[in-house]
Amino acid sequence: WGEVMNYSSKDPAWIDRDRFVLSNGHACAMQYTMLHLTGYNTSKEDLSKFRQLHSKTPGHPESFVTDGIEVCTGPLGQGISNAVGLCIAERHLAAEFNEGPDFNIFDHFTYVVCGDGCLQEGVSAEASSLGGHLGLGRLIVLYDDNKITIDGATDLSFTEDVNKRYDAYGWHTQTVSDCE
Image 1: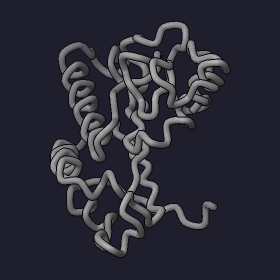
Image 2: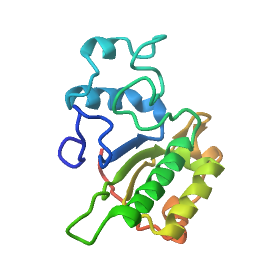
Image 3: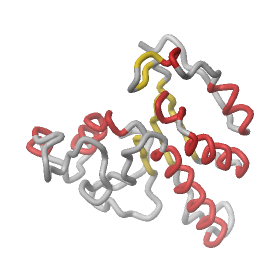
Image 4: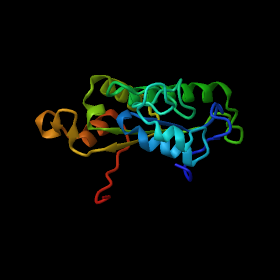
């Protein structure tokens, strides 16, 4: 986060910042902690009020509550789908305003962390298919294939080969193994 992404905690709305979308929003304690550690307006006291009513650290990321949160990610699949939209916007702005390789006003990346539940949803399949069709190379998705969903183990309902599906969409895929 702190060594790869380009952002400004002093100016969370900087227009060419890299975006981070936590599609599996229930894991947002990690995101709030990273915002705190990188200087965003999220204090230790805010972290201690995690998942409390009216806190800056609700149980799912809310873009209108916490600086540094790009999109609200409640329903499964919503985050990765929003990230595809963010990349489409970046591509459009780059086409409109960039003037050659030495004058790139818009060249940010969008990073996404998503899980099994996110990729089970139809909306994520449709958005990911469009992202592959458009060749959105500035979209980096980290898929946490932890073999679990809200209903239990994925072998109850989700046994497809996700890498093959994303290969078919036209994405560049890589597998990282033994990373426990």
